[in-house]
Image (cartoon, rainbow, N blue to C red; front, side, top):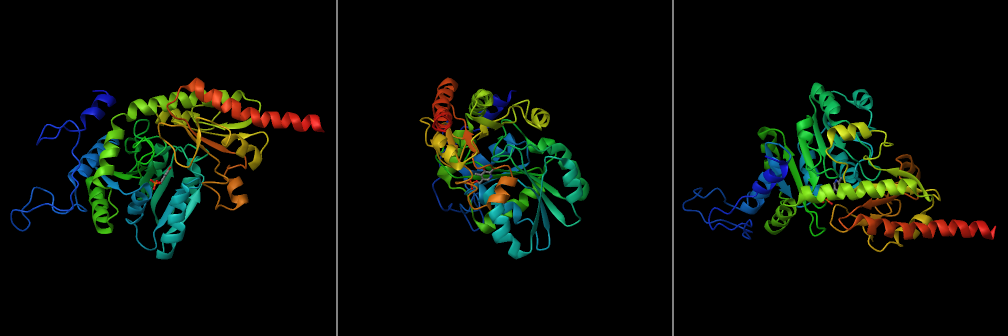
Length: 391
Ligand SMILES: *Cc1c(COP(=O)(O)O)cnc(C)c1O
């Protein structure tokens, strides 16, 4: 069975009514026949039939034993960190999602959990930095916004040898392109707000575990801490997932065209996209992903915030907004938006230059998207030329 067939048919027909769409069980509680005697559901924080369908689907998509749905991607990340105890260490990718960095630094540091950030694009750095206290290795691949790639299989081996769990934030690739559990990861997390939801209309998070044993621990945390996904939003993610493979394939196709176009443009300095042969870890990406995804970042030759602002406010189809993975193309300027709170030298060292622009390439026609970028980029080039003539 192909992935697409498996995906579409993992969404069950309602056994009670035959409804082809999963019913939304908008309820807080379930009536019991006698104390403790019920149909598998007692209270909707603990379990809800609509959420349960989504949790089963995501476990299947990631080839894990169990899945759990949370109120946001960060709530999902938070549930994984709650597996740890005071004194444990996390070894994390240095180019980590800003919200995860904030959670680790401003919430968990005070509970005695420390985080060591390393450049995981070279497995040697992981081998050097891992310690007996490292309980959890945290990867994102590709990363945000510079699309760094780390070798999941090689790092999984290092983590396993050390007795550490490996968790991969698979938001950028989605399970349509990359299945970390099949490469040795123990846990996968998602911001389902992005590609899984796919339509920029919800906030949601997911955790998938390789074993049921680890799943039971996450389930306990989910119920005990309570950051569950609502029945209606669970339904929206299910609805998004139905077209995940089609969407992600097309996002990737469009992004490749846009990245190749950008590489040739005279106003562009560097282009970051794992699908380009010039990407440092293109080979690893080609091995562990079945496509390169919809996110492309680039810098300008005129490496200033002003030049970048001209571009990000000059497009018509690419809307200026944080977030990614939706049908409509978005773009953002990390230096003044998502990465604003990071000190300038740290931000620049991480490769987030003043002129870096991140594109979430949507499902519009690629030719229209290129025309849109071209007219916005020409504003920068024209400014350059004018400056030259004035001199
Ligand atoms: C957006 C995002 C998150 C956080 O998810 P929310 O749904 O916004 O809480 C985590 N990781 C990555 C890679 C993201 O892009």
